[in-house]
Length: 248
Image (cartoon, rainbow, N blue to C red; front, side):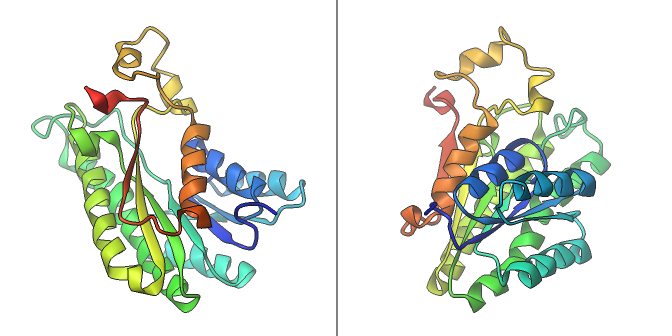
């Protein structure tokens, strides 16, 4: 029996990067997985890949910044599997258009807030009532080391992830009485395909982490723990996964 057998996990941004790694890890541990992604074809392809190994998977289109799209994705998950036990909000990310608040465009600022912060809010807002019905669940939100220690050059992203962190703590307080746990993962550099394309070995950023940058699978393993009953008394925490970068 796997660590998530009998549970249904919905992962936003589930077709690539950290989301994809988490979907695969959750499925390995017996979860029904719902892959919610802006790229419907990629979500359905991953669901087919998982289904070929006799695990239950559903790929759905989802724009996390659009309330109707989020509602449709969660409704399909509930119709297919009867509820949602685990929500991993992995959709979003930084942008090369980000920068200092005096330089970045307001359009870019609001785009980042809309996806990274507002998108997380919409998904939590829609899933929590389903978890209340089944008396419990685990919500895992992804913030960033930038929101914990502060850095320069990505102010929109830092603001959005700081909001995710603060909102998650408030949610943990609000919903604990219903058996809903809310935790935050705050990774440092994670070598997704997109990040690895412009951060090469030898880049100074490698020296900022005592153990080096993480792989998506490293984040997925932490998400698995937070999703599982092994973490049944863990809520309101901020889990740093930065290879020791925040030790400085």
